[in-house]
Image (tube, rainbow, N blue to C red; front, side, top):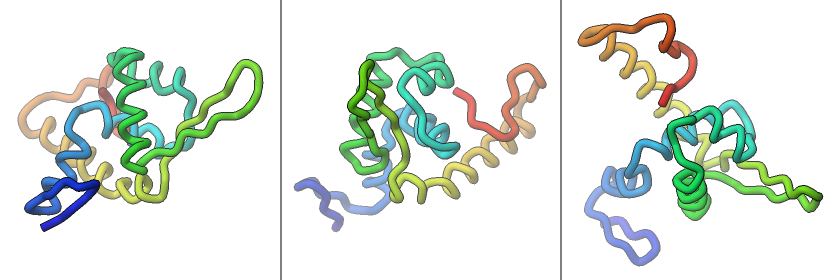
Length: 123
């Protein structure tokens, strides 16, 4: 058994699925692999996500120690998001998911130059 914050899991995959239970969290992490970003930058990159949802997902990832939120005491306030070491450890997993997605589309679909992202994850 696995225990985290008084929650019991029967296998480690269940832990992973519980943390990454939606499409937005992995996209946020992927884009933070390039380096720290402000809220507005993330919202522009992941343009299909609403501001409210982005706020919620960033808080959830921060609570799970996957991202770090740094507030700079200035006017106007500056907030920067970056990956923790735990978040950075997801890089090889996300790179393999990216490769698998490209291979899947090549076999069962079509990649056009206008919407392909060979080197970056897309929404």
